[in-house]
Length: 334
Image (cartoon, rainbow, N blue to C red; front, side, top):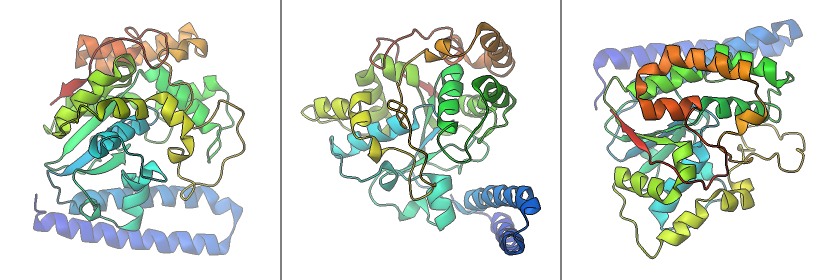
């Protein structure tokens, strides 16, 4: 997909703007006045958004590109591990998952690396970008979804451990989540954009609850979508290493990358990056009023996405239980 001349010119203009923002941030940091900190943070956010825009404008795209996309805390790492297992017949030859499926907006974009620079086929990247902001091309996109109430609770627990550290109780964090005042914005808008897939990208929708229910069925569908033939002899190893138990045992390979974020404060036992992996755990932490508020907003954004997806994502169809409960298979959009 070749970029048109106007897009190249716009990318150059965005690049010039990025340079200006970088100079402004450097100047304000040199001044060192604490009053300027909110302005610096806004400029840094603008830098990130502009960098993602420039990347999208110059992205050429290839059928060998595979994007694993989710709203945060929706099973991103789990899908990354499944894809890696499928492409290696059950190996675990990495120090950190970011080495084999790097985070687009936190690893590739800031370092100016193209997806085409990645080795192997498919070339796998992870992202939390919205449908509007994701680079679009002829490759494949796996979009992971999860019951939004479980997402909110999991996001809250992560916010307690990683900078910028959240100091609010769950009820206040939930209000911010509902209003989209958290990183990556509105869960409702994010999910709606990807499920509607208005530009007809090659998208496979994989529900967290469905992977939890029948891991083998989910793994086979992901393999089919990616055009990967599973060696029957390797399947038991692939499934075992794609399990929550295995990933929790090797948590250091999946935790938020220490090279990109300051080291978190020591966490209590059982509160690591990979927590419980339970379906429906939100019921233990959110009350009926929160669930009703969520349902009203869900109806406004997502009522038209289909009955099965509606019940799972809103929490109406998800049963409580551990990550190996029986259930349905992944869905395809587009």
